[in-house]
Amino acid sequence: MRLEIDSYEIKDLKEGPKTCVENGVLYVNKKELEELILQDANIEKVDIQLVYPGDKTRILNVQDVIQPRAKVEGQDFPGWLGKIKIAGSGKTLSLDGTYVINSNASTNRIESGLLDMDGPMRKLSPYANTPNVVVASYAVAGTEERAFEDSVKCAGFKAAAYLANAAKGLAPDKTEVFDMDMYKNKKEGLPRIGYIFQCYSPQFDYLAVSDKIFYGRALTGTLPLVIHPNEILDGGVMGWNALKAIDSVSYQNNAIIKELYKHDGVDLNFGGVILVSANTDADNRDRNCQIVADLAKNVLNLDGVIISKILGGMPHIDISSMGVACENAGVKTCVHTTPLTAVGTLGDTILFNDECLTAIVTSSSPFERTVINFKAEKFIGGTAETKLYSSEMKLQLAGDERINIEQYLTAGVHDHTGGRKVQTLEY
Image (cartoon, rainbow, N blue to C red; front, side):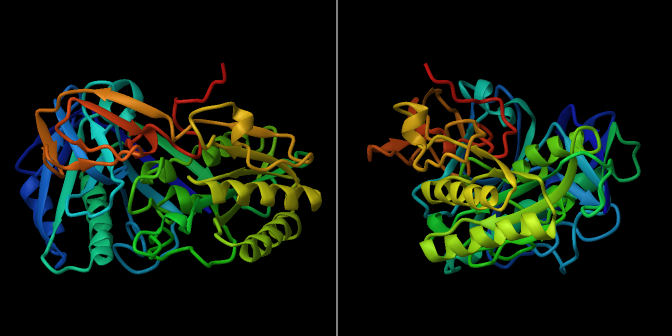
């Protein structure tokens, strides 16, 4: 499977009569984009705003962040915007340096994402340092809540494809090629290394319904799947309906997959991806662990695997158990994990211990608390009176100058695949 991603560097963002890219400037016809999104009968109103680094703007109820991408030929975001078509091949247009910030302005969720375009977020989040297109959708009265969340999700994908298509016909600034036959080694004698990507956990299911993240369907209850890594990079797997220390940009640019591609044929052979969802009960966990180990050893013929987790404690146990199962099957394992608490030692956060798990990589701590001292003058996706989540159950409003927030609710600060600069250090 061969995927080419043509990237276009966006240096500035402006409103214009025609959506196009000229000399690194993305011009956006907001009215045309609004009409496209309002084709969804669940969306009564959409507020489209262009925001810039240094703006005294606070974006509320952030559901997702998406990199603008579109297929030259084929289906954009298959399963969400159109019929199912396997992603991962052909040519894809991608805009770098700008993002779609997708906001569910009608959400009733207690925990909801936030992004400031100035203040402390400038040091923490890459999205506070780029000009972005904010799409804040409002529900038609009486719309079922989860159905509206899916509509908001699709609104973001529509905006992402619409903006990326503005670069069609232009010469790209950069082209990345991802070309791999999972069952053929590029260089004999090198170890075959695969990736077990735990991309969802049902423990956070809102209203007891899982988010659709895999070609427009939920993964909860699905047995482990062997997929091509290009499918993830090309929109086959996208973000949740809420920020949980990861977003669609992190899926579209999965850092572990890209790193394995860099080493493919150099000091390892990249042997493919096993996609899994976390489990909430022991029986399904044991079943999935055994299946994962069998797929790694006997289907993909892997010598080693990297396992990454999603937010939560149950996912923590899952990846540890999968690691043990793989080691017992003769597949060497590296567990890429995150601490579950912002206090104590790294050892306090392990939850699981086995002598065979000797390679553990710890990245950032999504439950780290940050005090944001920033007086916003403009609010998108909410108002100054919008309530913000506090784990201490203290009343916080979006208009407060001082916000105490756990970092997993801040857009762009964390990425469970290791694609962010924030890291955990033990003193």
